[in-house]
Length: 382
Image (cartoon, rainbow, N blue to C red; front, side, top):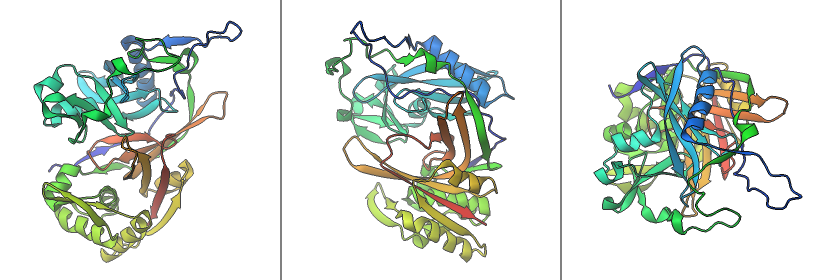
């Protein structure tokens, strides 16, 4: 069976780092310069080891294989670092200095693959792209590697994106920055080693996910909101993997999901946020299970905590602006949360444990990511 479940214990998060931007050193002698530390491979590994100790106190994780990644203008903005338990791959953490909390994503699970590994191992990519090419972050959840023979870049969802979205960093000019410094990532030294206290953390006992590839193969359709609801249905026992096609198409109909386009025989759909909760309630009712829902815009961590703490799933929906300038929406099944507070400060970092709808891998996203155009939450209760 292609579907996988991860048994998860209580999350234990202690250390995270916060940064809002890469500071520019002042040249005016009257202005005190900000002390910086260059984040080398060694520093990235040290940061990952500290974070690994915090998120997995019961398993001795070892950080290794740091990979620098870039924004689409060619500036280095962070590192992807792998975790190992003994000799077994055991997840990863992504440090991104354009993200308010620095930790843009992490996964702690046996054989969990980072976005770069997914591109190299699971995508139809040429030997050219496997020969040490740079990896670029194109959206909050998407990374790509240029593949010139294919005339495109390949992202971690197996999709081709135009090479034009990646500019030549050598010809990119940035005022206030020293030429030739774009391959270096700088962070404030005070924030690199800043510790946080965990305020609250909880998750459902099992993690439910089914990949986009599996959904497409079995149903001939795909919509992120439907995949999110399908995972919620499995939690309640109203969706069954062996009946995936019928359940998926029923959820499609109950939520009035509409087909936006077709590609290679697959119909892709869009679901209005206002239809997600009521549609799932009707679907569950058709299975003899009574479920209620609450939909809200701009949800905070408490909205999801209330659901998770009584063993109910939720859905997080958000919008971003893509590199083409268009809004792109996405919905994910929420199956856990963790909230932290910076010591000697009121600053908080809120994360959600989600099934992203594309892969079967556990991912943690920052609820307070600064570049969402809009957010919504749908919480269920049985």
